Image 1: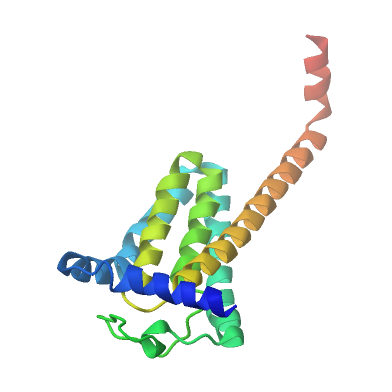
Image 2 (image 1 turned 30 degrees about the vertical axis):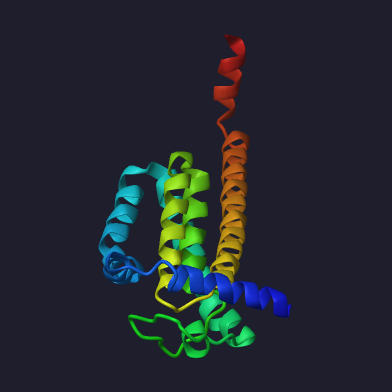
Amino acid sequence: MDGLIRIDTWLFLQLNAGVASSFLDWLMPIVTNLRYYRVPLALGLVALAIFGGGKGRGVVLLALITVTLTDQLASSVLKPWIGRVRPCHVVEGVRAITGCGNTLSFPSGHATTSMAAAIFFGLLYRRWLWPLIAFSVILSYSRVYLGLHYPSDMLGGWIIGGAIAWGMVCLYRSLLRQRMERLRLFRPRWSADSSGDK
């Protein structure tokens, strides 16, 4: 375990201080700030609910449940239970250009929720899978660059968020199959009889 912690700390320093630049110092605080995404995300969800038909409305509802579930699991359950201190409080040589904050480290809430959203939407709208995963990776990396999380915090968040999203996609598909089965069972008898006469 000590060896894994040393590797995690070494990799953290490489991704935090080892690649530091004035451009990244300017960019990463913007990337990590979720306030910049609220309006575009809200507009996207509204558009999907309006123009995406029944599937779109179902996806939006389950997406909101998925993100809320992963966020609460990460911030209210796992972080207090595991109690890992942020690297900017304990690692020498760290660059925390936006401050360190008082919250805990594992798992990263940004990584957990963004990967949950990426996997959930990406599995249901396949052409968006890799762009959304790429966005989650970049957003997650901003947390390491700013000295707020270890790489393992990102990895743990991706696994947790991805697993929950996969489960929600399975739930969505199960509900969809049940709905289609009910429609088949309750199809008017005259429709079935007329189709058999052709």
